[in-house]
Image 1 (cartoon, helix red, strand yellow):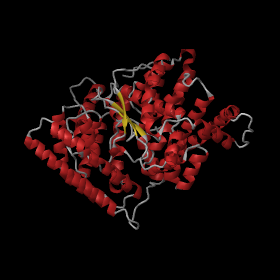
Image 2 (image 1 turned 180 degrees about the horizontal axis):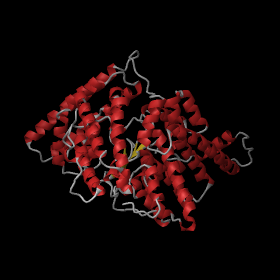
Image 3 (image 1 turned 60 degrees about the vertical axis):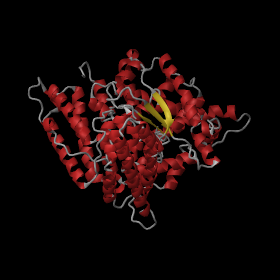
Image 4 (image 1 turned 90 degrees about the horizontal axis):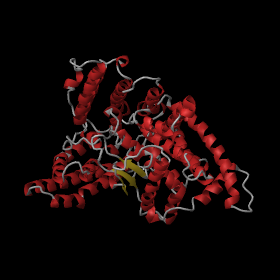
Length: 600
C-alpha cells in the first residue's frame, strides 16, 4: 500500500487483482437503465448498484477485499473460457455505459462514469495486450485469498471455514489452469511465485487445522475440509515444483521490462494523471535537482554541529552524505523495529488533533502486525491492508515485514540505518497517521461506492506523501534541519521512484546504474537500493504513483491557497479533498475548482 516499505502494499487500498479471472455473468438489469427513474442521475445510480453487484460475483476475491463476502465460497478457474467470459462482460458493460452522456450527469456521476469506463477498458488491456496471466507466475496464489478469509471477522468461524472448504475444493483445477497459462515467464516473477506460494502453504498449516478442530463443524464436515486442505497443499506444492523446474539456466525467460509503448499505456490506465508518463519523468528529474539544492543548504548548516572544528567537504553530495550518515546512526534495534512503529502511533494521533489538521475517527482500529508470509518477497517492507467500504468496522492492518533471519549483521544494520529514528517517523506518517490509514477511513465514508472501490493508486500514494510534507509544514519535528533534511531524503525516494520506474522499464537502465543513482543522489543504503531494483523488476508504473499523486495534490492545494488568500483553511482543504474517496487527483481537482456548483 510507502514507496519502499509500501509496506500495499500489495497495493493499498485493496486493489483488484487484475490477473484473477472473473465469472461469466450477464449484466441482466445492468444493461438497461431503469426507465421508471426520474432522470439520468437516478438511472445511473441504479445502474451503478446493479453493475457492482454483478462485478462481485465476477470476482469474489476482489469482493472479499472490499468487505463484500457473499461470494467467498467461489473460486474462479483462470482458463481460456473464463477469459472469454471476462471479455463479454466488459464489452456488455461498456455498451451499457455508452447509454449515459456525461453532460446529463452531475459532476460526481461524471467522474464515476469515467472511472467505470477506465476500469473496464483497463481490464481488457491487461488481459489482451499486457497478458500478465502468461508471464507472471506470482499471479496465482490461493494462500493469499484463503488467508484473508481465515483471518477475517466478517462471519463466525464455522461459516468462514465452510466457505474456505468450498473454495479450496477446486484448488487442483485452479493450479492446473495456472500451469497451462504460463509461457515464457520472467525469471523475477517466477522466483516471486515460488516464494509467495511457499509462504501460502503456511495458511494451510497448523493455524487452519487448529481452527477446524475447535470449530462447530460436524465430524463429516471436518473430515471433508481436512482432506481438501491436504489436496490444496498438494496442488500448491505441485505448482511450486513446476515453477522450480522452469528455473534452471537456459529456460527462455522473457524480459521483465515491458518497453516504452506499453509503459505509457499502463501509466494512462493505472495513474489517470493529467500528464503523460514522459512528462512525469521530466518533472521528477526537475524536482530531484530542487531537493538536492535544499539538502545542500541544510547539510551546510548542520555540518558544524555534528563535525565541530572540521572543514566541510567542498563537494555538495559528499557534504550531504556525511551529515546523513551521522543522523542515521540513531535507529531501532534489529528485533525492535515493529515495536518502534507501534510506539509512534499515539504521538501522531495527538499531533493531528492538536493542530486541527483533520478530524479523526478513534473508533476505527489500527493493528500493527508482522507481514503475513504470503505477502512477503515483493520488495515492499511495509504496507497497509484496509477494510473495504462494506466492512468499515474491521481492523486496518499496518504490515511490517521483519528483517530476514538470514541477513548478516551488516545487512541488518544497513536496513535499520535506512529506517532510522527520523525516517521511521516519516514512514509512520505515510503509512498510518494521517497517511494511508486515515485516507482509507475517509474513503470508506464516500457516498460513491465507485470511488471507494476503484481506488486510484496515485491518489492514495500521493496523499500519503503529501501528508508527510503537510505534517512537517505544520510544525512536526519542530521545524528542525535534521527532520527536514531526512524528509528531503525520503521525498527524494518518491521522486527517484518515478525516475527509475520509467528509466528501467522504458529506457533499459541497468541494475548497476540504478543502484549507483539511488546511492549517490538518493543517499540510500545498499540494502535499500538493491531492494528497490528488485521491486522495479516486479512492477511497472506503480513506483511512479507516489511522485505523480503527491505533485498533483500539492499543486492543487497551492492553487486553492492562492485563490482564497486569507480565507484558505488547511483542515477544510484536507477534509474536502478526502471526501471524494480514492478518485484520481485530476477529477478531484475538477470538483474542488468548480465554482459555486453542487457536486453531489
